[in-house]
Length: 231
Length: 204
Figure 1: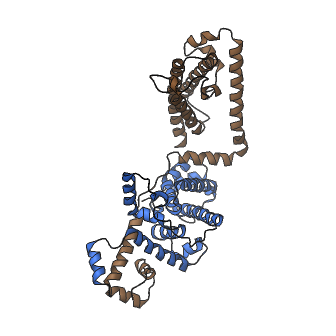
Figure 2: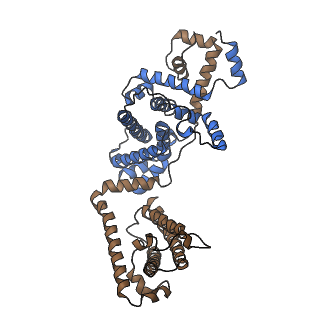
Figure 3: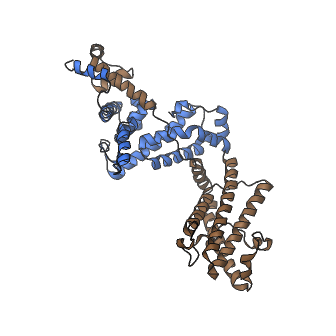
């Protein structure tokens, strides 16, 4: 009778096996073949390729670690962000309604200091909602408007997923981030104007495209910043 | 292969990490995350769960490293945490679904080996079935866990029995059954030499 798989495995792993089994396997080529296959399988299992986690796995650990370490503080962050966004939206609407010369804004230069001061955040509700009356087909001859909006929203999600910035940053980095945020806020402002006025699709498409470029730049700076903090 | 025994970390890094140095934490993660993730993927067979186990393992490492002393190798400590996390998950799954330890293997053609209906995709999947990795995935949770812990991670049957709340004999018999099934999934003897041996020695 042949050796059982359990006995062959014990032989393979150098564990105690009955003398009769050892003698049988010594004389039985079939059992030797089976033993060889078990050894080969073990070697092959050990040689299976390494599986690598997602690139942002460490960020995930840090985020959860932060949540556990500072539960009270973190719990209020999303609410504060939401509150800030709501306040900003109200300010924008009031400003638009109160300003009789608002139509001139659309023609102003991108980096107006006065208007930059008005907008201090990168994420405006007006920027994430599709403007009224504008749909994917509005962008004839170019990238569909819906695709641009979707890309912009994806960039915002990616940006939000990055870990918080360090407490101390260089003046240059802070300046770059501030400028990018101001320019994005300006575009958001222009788009909110367009939304109220029923702006034409080409202008909307240009603004969304510009916003995506700025978001990409901001993401690159913030990502580099996060890398310095994490590793 | 990402094995815990291949993960080498300087004691100074461990000391820094135990004092809360975040850069040292990041170094530990980079060093051990492939091994932890591979272990979890092989044991649990689901990428999303492996991600979860990876996070939970390192959360525990970060939370408890200040209490880690040199009572044993650091790699073995992390490995034990990861294995326990995986087993906890398997136990909870067994309890939740009422599936016993003796549950059968994944049926051929199920899961990641499903027929997509595309000829080229199906051909690739048929090829994958011949692969040891695919064969391993078809084993049930218990068999796959025992095979991986014993043959790859080097746990003894006694250790596996303790980890799983069973005996060393249980681990031995599971390993034998698993190998028999693996051989079945991988096909019979492949080489001419092996086939000849099998033909000649049938009456052995």
